[in-house]
Image (cartoon, rainbow, N blue to C red; front, side, top):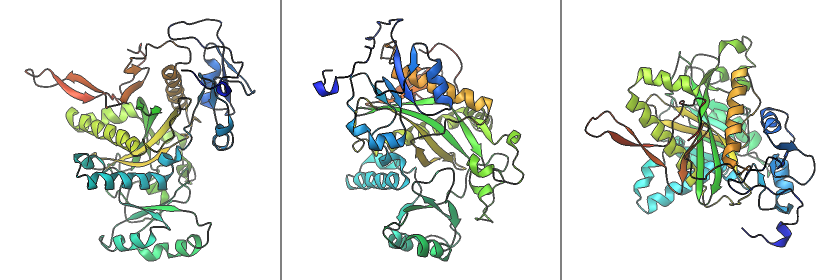
Amino acid sequence: SDLPSNRRDRSLPPLPFRNQISSSTRILFKCTLSNTILDVLSRRVGWEQTTGEEWHFHWATREWMSTSFDRYKFTSRQLVNHFRNDFELTRKDNLVKNYKKMRRALEKNKSKELSKYSFIPASYVLPSEYHIFVEEFKKYPDNTIWIMKPVAGAQGRGIFLFRRLKHIQEWKKKDVTGCDAQPYVVQSYVARPYLIGGKKFDVRIYVLVTSFRPLTAWVHREGFARFSHSRYSTESVEDAFVHLTNVAIAKTAPDYDPEKGLKWSLNRLIRFYESTFSKQRVQDMITDLSNLIVNSLRCVESLIIQDSHCFELYGYDVLFDEDLKPWLLEVNASPSLTASSQDDYRLKYRVLSHMLDILDLEGKREGTEHHVGGFDLLINKGVIVERTRGPDPHNCFVPSVNLRLGEYHESKSK
């Protein structure tokens, strides 16, 4: 599309139109990281790293987005890896606020969609909602466990659990006073998580959003489950090794052994579920998970600043309870791309390679695909529905969401 002259003044080499591939085309990328993403970009045929201001693809830092994005004069075929205000989704307090705002709107309109918005536990933003939280706290049973999370924390830092209000009085005295008080989110703790081998785990799902208007999102079939270091118990709420699944937390344990296997592939997890429950029960779980992803994006669809130069790969962290109900823990704008093992490296390498296939700066795609590499197109203006063969011989096909978690294998994408 035509752009104002001040947005077309870069002397970048032209990129090919759809289906017009030129072997001489150079795609210039900018990346300051030195982990898996740099390997993927450097090894991609026809791609070349640059340190200058002329590029086609920029794996940008958060600092660049906040200081340089608004001043940069984009050309029509440039891409950067964040949306301008992605914090509406990825900051814990904003996610809670926007989720509750959506629920209030649906309640007001008596919408049937409200039942699909029950994937975040009861949550309050502190200090602003402290008094509301205290009133709600009194309505819960005495032994209810609550979890406190700093809104901008990562790798489990600053998280703690408590049962009684007096347990957060020290936090309140220390952090709630003054203008620079750090916000926290307090949530009712999912106390009956599904356990494997007696251990709690959460699941990392990779979600690629290429547009918020129209909402277009892809989900990768690969991911992983992260297990806590110690067996689960609600007796001790102070033990982070029991309740938190972050690898950074587990590594601090005195008896931490990286060979013990605190991660499972998503394929292994799905196969485990299918050996424990019916295949239909597992498919229902995947459908619930797809609703969680779609509806979390719906909460911010009208808030995120849409820009055709932006895309984002999100890391969704999800917990399944004993009933296989998925709960959204958080959405990461910069999921770790540093590999913890060879398997982890290969997984992240594939996710990033397939992401570039979808973004398609080379112009190879037809543009109508529902599957690219390990990614499935989950939503594009509406949820993508496919027909799959069902158990009833008289009704050979049943509708299901276009999400095949754990089913990725190396083959030509459709």
